[in-house]
Length: 264
Image (tube, rainbow, N blue to C red):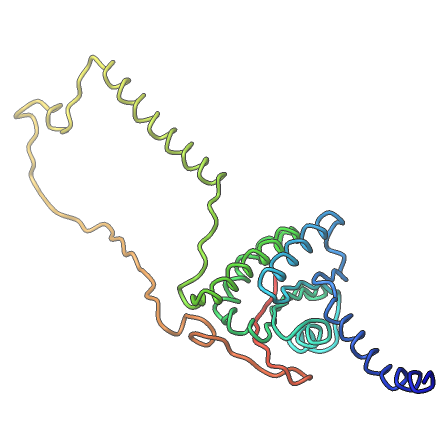
């Protein structure tokens, strides 16, 4: 009996190891900072944000940073994702060697993150990336991933001109309120000041000329200059890369991926 159990265990061992290896792959951290861009506190904050979004929707929302890679960033990012994460998700890859970024999507992520949506996310994070505020950039990415996945789940896919609204910013509102207050105050003070003037003035120059002392011998109109204002007309060719939806390709493992990127 013991020999039978032993032989059974030996036969099952390869399957157990394969399952264990697979579980380790799927349990890979959703934040990989090989380029060492984040402080310990920043890394903790970003990882928490990525995990919260991932567990909320049952998808892998990931960030990885490297300094140097083999091959083009598209294939590199696709393979990096395939080796570590599930069939549904999105990853932001940053390569500091050439200051490039790329977002790769997989499974449900292809539907949730359209070409136009990826371009939109890039626009929102590039400012902080270029200025070295990496944690802020990654937190913005996580917040936008939440919005995009929520939109896809609720039947409202963000594409074309339909993009998430920027969050309400208290600082900006206070600045606008202060500016309005200064303008209103200036107008009010100017009104009070005008009431103190005891000497009037005439609008026309002829009121200051003695009648009959000026004789006009010649009258002529001269064209001096003109002002032309041009407004750019938007055309359909200036929209997203594919004009709507998600373009996709196959990685080396055969998975379908969408994506897009650039430099900062």
